[in-house]
Image 1 (cartoon, helix red, strand yellow):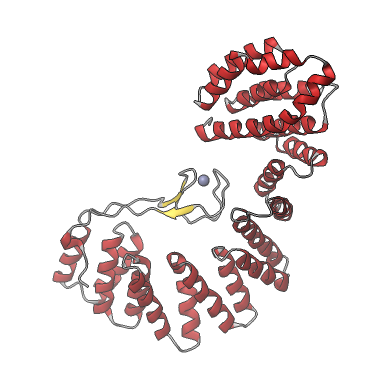
Image 2 (cartoon, rainbow, N blue to C red; image 1 turned 90 degrees about the vertical axis):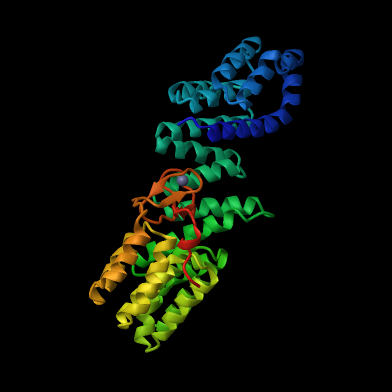
Length: 407
Ligand SMILES: [Zn+2]
């Protein structure tokens, strides 16, 4: 899958490498005494054209031009690196590995060059699925250049793939220490990794440690939704019912669109505490804040049905189905209510009117990063491996006047 975005990554990376190596360019041309050749290469139309084709996403033409540029100066390490990267992005991993390994055999590589070639090689191995060798390469890059953020991030991703959460966490923490001013990107990821560490601790029966991880995850980034779920569960197990309620209520506050994840949990707790009316208020507040919240309506409908208030349950559920006609669970609940109301034909007819144009689909969750689809809500995308990228896609019917619920 040689996509445009991965090509842009290659370009960015290449430019980054180019800048770093550029600093050493000066020294090189003096050392070798061949500075005129170097300048020739950089000013050659082939090199410039190659870069231009790369930017305009034409890798084949870029390769042709860069090959010509190399023939003018076979020593030019930068161009070999770029060419290898282009082969990798085109899926010719064997060729990329061969090119980068050959560069490593050069006797005069300085430390930075050595690190960058290894980084390229690590990416080749990763792309080819040789994960152990990729790990080795990135580790070696960090040994040569401990501040190499790119190697750290790649290591993190590899560890995540292998569910080595502790190592992934440490890699991200180091990367975060490097970009000391901007942690907007790092904190949420680190928080999700802490949540995973909490789950590991929980499996090992280390409840105190697990709770600490979940709390730290929430502290780092309040949008780490699964951490609230797990923290509340842990609190409940240790008998802290009020604490669990508080944790889940906080989830509802910070992420009302994810509130449905704790509906069953909160209802159970409120029922235990003898304050079930709190559940009704919670759903009502969510609906008032966002009139399209069909999940709060569904929860309220179910709740009213259990309270033997079938008439009001049905009205709420009819509103819910307008906002999401594809949800099977609303239809099923409506049928339960209709049965409860002895299938009054006037109500069944209203239901049929409302659902005439309903379409059903199976995988409503979609990754905003790579458009991967999933039937369930995932916290990390199995395709692009980004954290917290899933949204629920609602294919709503065209909104017409008569489709609006009465306020
Ligand atoms: Zn994705």
